[in-house]
Length: 93
Image (tube, rainbow, N blue to C red; front, side):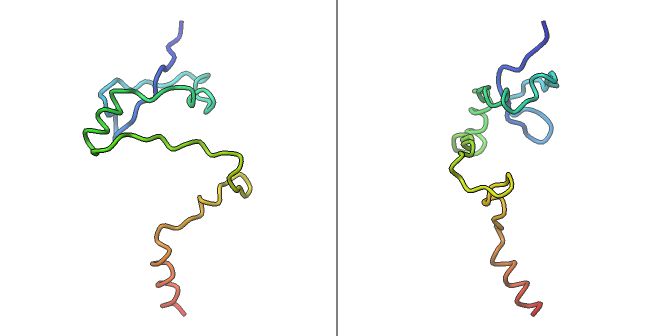
């Protein structure tokens, strides 16, 4: 019987934050539809809370009602440095 992942681990730069051994997932488990069914590791959540002082919160999946343009959410085009972008373009004029 082949190994199958049972939880999703949170990762730091090179390893899981709970210290669990990183393993390569079998090809049949790589589908997003499979990964979304797995819970996040409770130990990883505890370490996250200890490190960052807040609970780990998974981003909700996008809903059908959100505006989309060609498969991309319009929010993907939001620029966090829009003020700096405007200042730069004003200097260029």
